[in-house]
Image 1: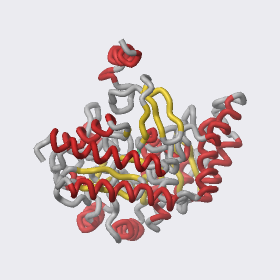
Image 2: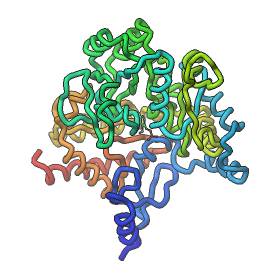
Image 3: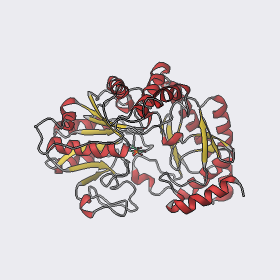
Image 4: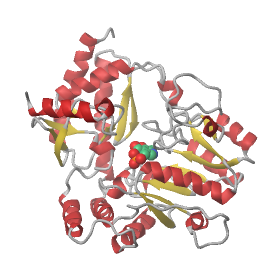
Length: 426
Ligand SMILES: Cc1ncc(COP(=O)(O)O)c(C=O)c1O
């Protein structure tokens, strides 16, 4: 039995559904350096999953390894203020337009949970408006209309997971991304009850239409509704100042994760001082005070990794190249599908994209509902066979994907797409 078969069998035994909390994959990984990842049988892949996004400067970057190693023998977590977390906080505040203060948590899920709690505490209101198909992690409020299987009338939420109380549904309002008219109508009708609006400024792989984010900003300003950008994917990826810099629309609060922790457990809520003040438990302006504490919050190892990652991004300013590489891969894929006359939409923004197998254009979640997922699954499997590793629903490009990687990826695209013709009736 190959080593991987033994370990796969063990995984089947100990993890429900063979799943350790990451999406199931038949591959078991053992090592990743730069743009490459290896499975336990020693097979090499060009990695476009990047640990679900954090590893934008590549795996095991020497500067990150050095910074983390330096801290390792000086303690991994203190549950107390430490210099590295303060320095990382200042760096984030200097970079992100809306950031005047920062509070750390350990995961993106926690960051959006607390951002929602913060706007409720700040406004004294309860409802949160989110966009259909928008992902904000795995807590009860974010698992509303993330992936509804049928079209539910806006703004009614549909629950995505078992185990979530039915009552939570009534705390959420759902709007269609890129449809300002409907969004405006929902906000106007519910403005007295809305505590905040949360949005991925770039929703999964869907770009905002020109003017959409600006209009959402304008109406939330008009009714004094705090606007939260979930920049866990876009932060430090679309530019050093994130999507708010790239699209030039500044929210009141923002959640950050992935890149800011350089592949270690840390995430953050940042925002305007007056709003962030709700996290000040010593303040007597809110009763009872907003409570937020975490064992690993701002731990020095993650802070060291985050600081080293941001140092590299700041020094190299790789954003033009990052977009160039991503745009080239996108346009190449498009051309290959066209040549094979396969109806497919390559959707994304520079370094983040994926494919929907459908003929219609994609501008919100409902446009994606008719796409054929079985063809996408086949494409992803064909790519793995050709040495390309990606997530189920996204390609992430890194600053270390070089011209050799791109050349190999394009050859793999050719083979993987050609195979689809044999595997599906398209
Ligand atoms: C936009 C967005 N928000 C929140 C999260 C949740 O982050 P975490 O997986 O760290 O809980 C993710 C994770 O992929 C994300 O992409």
